[in-house]
Length: 504
Ligand code: NAP
Image 1 (cartoon, rainbow, N blue to C red):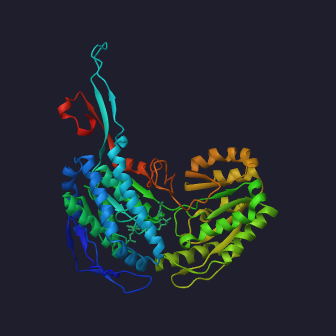
Image 2: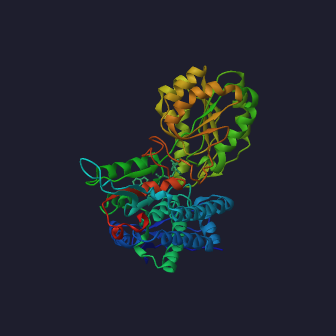
């Protein structure tokens, strides 16, 4: 099935075209034109979202859960067309898009069940103490309430699960917050068809149409106007450190600053402990190469750095990684710009005398082939650029002298989404010493695995100290992510009839 986008914005239930257009950059197939976003559309969408909030924010949990379920059904009803346009726009294989669609509908249904259960409300009741001296205490109850309209920016590498109806949108809608999505210019047609699914769900459930708008991008001032709009009360963002930081700063500089939940990049270090290296250096090298090149390395959880004690086991580990990477051919990247940035990242490594190439490839156009480098802990700690994410299949081995230097290196790390320990039983003592450092650095710590997959569950933390995210108290994946779009309100001395339905 071939999907041909009409190229319009969805503003509060109406498909609207604008005169200025931009073209998408598909990996293959026809190019399509899309209406460019405008500041006026941002205004209209934000006002409609505010109007919708008065009913949607007060709607029953069951009404919101049913809405989320119907969005998931409507996405499934468009399954083939979504895969068609998604694979053309991003170059991702069809199987990957099918899997991501399942993850997206799974997230929507997970949030529907989560709000039906109601635990997320964190209800607290302190009964009245009418005989307390010297003054009686009134009854105080507390509950989490939705915060108001939320702006959502998705990332290029998850055109479904971290985009139009992805995790941020699902969490905000579940909380009771209307959403204004700034469409990603790397997959505007995919954004459009997913918005059609949300539009259909709004019509079927009778929800206020202002609860969801999609403004296609094309111009940076659209995103700037959105995060600065006075009716927007929080931003969910998934993307690069530079883009996230620019929008975070705008949020902080507003007359009324608002929270900016930015999920950014990370190099996701792996620490290979000595006994594990001795026992299975080859397997670890092969496993790393597979994780590093999955999806052309275009994952925020890509393990870009392996830290290992120098010596014969490290040599075996590097050789196995090198040999496995040699089997991986060029892969198509998400956009021309990302392919260009990957080549620039590679040049950054090759320009440094303290960095030795192990695998050095040339990539053309939108293709990327793996690259592997080596350096020392000393060089790594002195050079901040070596700790910056290169989005793509590029790995760096950092050789340390001993456990002490491994720990010093860990202490010098920036905030990370993940940190991994590869260990055997005999490595336990060394791992115990490393863990308190890694807990301070990363949102998720793994043992004997690779961090690329992120489970959507209650216990997942996908976040971490800056620059992995802009808010270390939050996660963007799993049910806990709903907390970003809620705030606690206390109700003191309330008659039952006036209490919110969920608090009675
Ligand atoms: P991106 O270039 O930052 O784009 C994300 C969104 O932000 C797009 O809508 C983009 O608009 C907008 N944007 C970027 N810079 C902006 C600026 N200066 N002003 C206003 N808007 C701006 O990121 P990407 O290339 O899509 O995604 C790749 C990055 O995302 C990687 O670094 C990856 O690690 C990270 N990522 C993180 C997670 C996570 O959960 N932590 C998950 C996936 C990806 P345009 O449409 O106009 O470009």
